[in-house]
Length: 254
Image 1: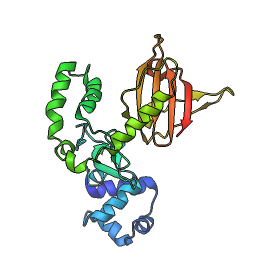
Image 2: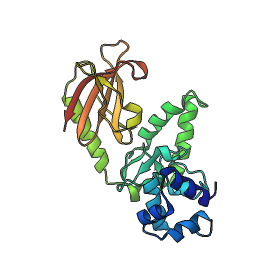
Image 3: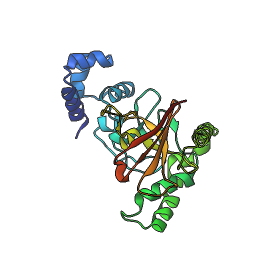
């Protein structure tokens, strides 16, 4: 799809007139008309405004001229899994698991490989093949090539370790020692917990990236522990396979 067609489709889906869109992005109606006629394209700053307004990437606005991949993990990027910058705009370089609200979530390549291997095994790779593929591919990506420049001097890793200490200090019966926390997107882990009243409640935002892990109970059985946390809270729950029959164990404000 050409840029002019993308811009027309997004505007009409939102129900904006050309005048209304022009007012929102601080241009004239004639400028909007020229975009949609294919005479011109928005400048860089306007593309950023349109990206935020429509909740799509600049790459999509330009008609998806190239297939992008996350420059940290190598995953093909679509708008639904792109990370977000601090101002809420979509980022064209990273997925939401590797980059959340302007923060890089991985500082150890081996940790990232462990997570990715678990997702690759059973599709087209054995575990050995998946690990070898990731070890060859990741060093070629921009984040790892520029790690010393992009890294935050260990601040995010220190935050993760602080969370791990706080979770282990809770001494939840049956919960093994937590050693790692990975980036988890809310929509994948936002379970509905039953309340005594018979209602159910979700505590997470589907669009937010959290830190968490899944651990088998020390008591055995079919239920696992789920751990989720961020700067504001710690949540611990149990559930069966595929998140069935969740039960909230603890929700603690930090």
